[in-house]
Length: 66
Image 1 (spheres, rainbow, N blue to C red):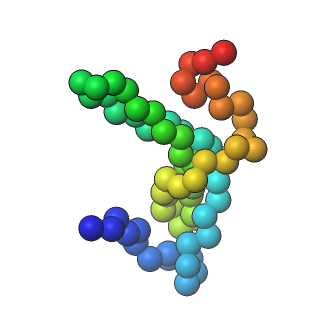
Image 2: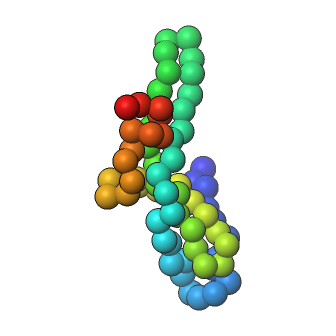
């Protein structure tokens, strides 16, 4: 089932603006998996995770790398 967002209250469609890069991770018996996503917000207050923005700040700090 596809997860949908509520309709935008400020216009006919959401206007998504990139906020920051975030990581999502899971740990299982076979190891750990981390993936990079971008957090997007709309002026109406809705938010979603989408494609990451590689032009954002240094991404190594998200996982504690140097």
